[in-house]
Image (cartoon, rainbow, N blue to C red; front, top):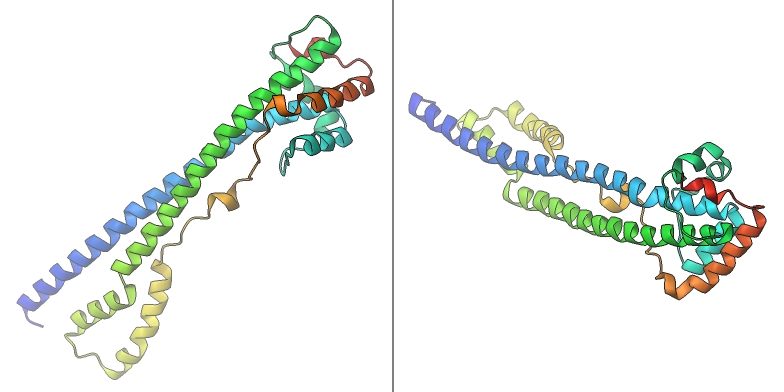
Length: 239
């Protein structure tokens, strides 16, 4: 290969590499940002859903009543129901510190506290589910970017073309036999993997029904929970 051919070969290689790695970097940056969004969503889940769910569980106090709560609302919790939390005085103090308490009697404060948390939890679940839907779309967009990238950048063809540039079209017999094997190994190493989907990384939660549709049944449930706890210390929850 003469100097002119070498110079043209280098220019072609540079153009191919710049295009390939430029697009690849954009996808990798999008994937890293998506991963950070997943972490933010989990923090949102803990702060806006998890803590209030555990507060409701503590007020109900018993797993049997919590499962009655599920039956009434159609709700399911794959993450935050932990029997230990129901018995921990330390967790109860920390979770209820600063909570606003309404009502003149101990029983009324208990009922109002539950319903206030319930309505706040509704909003937290709506916000979390909106985040989940956004992340699903974001993950799908990245997967489509990767698919488009490989349609426009066939690694096997690209590496075969570069190999022919290097050999000047005169590869030896051994080189011709080994090159496809080397290309396959390199292609596997260079392949971009789509990030895991939000549905596999984050738990899904159904929305809570509007309070007005189940308030009567929940009130009956809370009356049972109140009577079984032997005067719950609701007056301490808001301090």
